[in-house]
Amino acid sequence: MPIFKVPGSLGVNVPGPNGFGRDPFYFNGIHQAPSCGSNGGCDPYQPHHMAHKQSPLDAPDWDGVVNICYDVKGRRFGELMMSLRDSAISYAQDRRDELSRWDEISKGRTQKWFNSSDGEIRDYLLRVLDSVIRVLKSLTPENFEYDTQENSVRSGCLPGQGMVLTGVLAAVCPTDILAHRIAINMGFFELPKMGYSYGGTEFGQKDSQLLTLIHEVTHFYDVAGSIDSFNGVFNAAKNFSDAKAKMNADGLAAYILGID
Image (tube, rainbow, N blue to C red; front, side, top):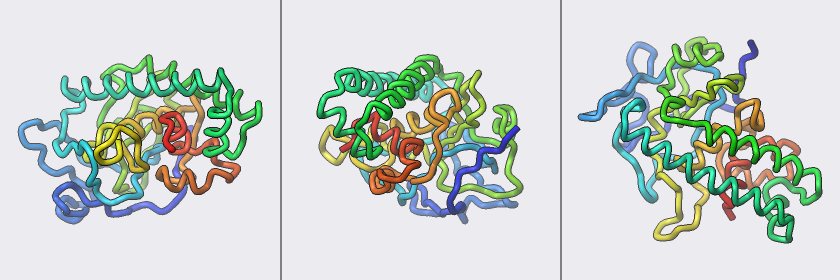
């Protein structure tokens, strides 16, 4: 089975909400999760070669930061992810309706993110959006699990050879098109839920739990088989004219959310 490996440098030390980086939780070659307090349920980071969402930013300081560790198999986390799923479906349907109208607004948005406003990009995005909506609608709390070596293998991807990835928010095995399992890392809990700009209801360019969910769904081979050529919304927007833009996960997620 092929290994899906994200290009680019690894091992970026992204600090947690307490300001510490990797060292306080790094023991015996494994990046250990910090204590979870009363919620419990945190597993250590484990090496993997799954398609993953990596934040290019430092610890967030914007709206709605979640600084507690949910039990990924607990009720609170399930409620959070179902809320995010429903929001993601709504935005994906908005983009699909926009493409159906194929007016100047719709063409301008595809031009902004993919350097094209012709019928080919429209047809491509319609297929992607239909697949995104289909997979999102199928998700339940059972689709989410800890990002561990064991879960990586179970989903169909090979584990890494001792490489510990830091700054990883979530991960999937793109070939896992039957179960659509999404692995969650500790960094996910440090993100704002929606990623609105401070004091407003418009999306900013920083990572969020909502953008991360959509990003991961696009990685599946039965959705878009997206890649991580340009990590972060800012980098995706800057490279909109690159031939790989329409396959870039953060660009697709930002397009779906209508980020301007």
